[in-house]
Length: 81
Image 1 (cartoon, helix red, strand yellow):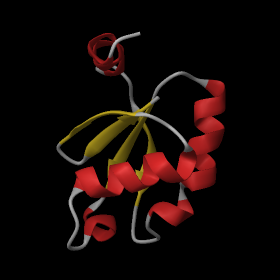
Image 2: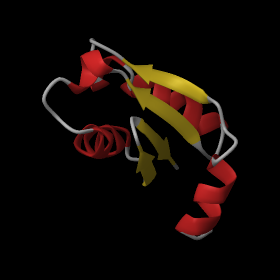
Image 3: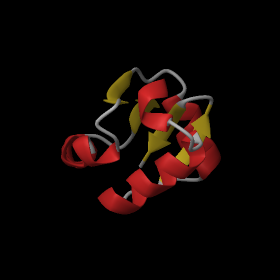
């Protein structure tokens, strides 16, 4: 599937992973488990997780840690494939 098709499919997804003050290390296993069960997972980066970094940077780090593809980031939300 193309990124555009994945973004369209992700539009109506609910957020199932929240990244908080524990950072991305606290959700790596959860995101990996969810990606095993479904094609797309939407994650929200709370203010406590972002600190001085951008959502794009954190989403890239999380995608790399899990071995997933980052489909898109919009605001404080990211979609992984």
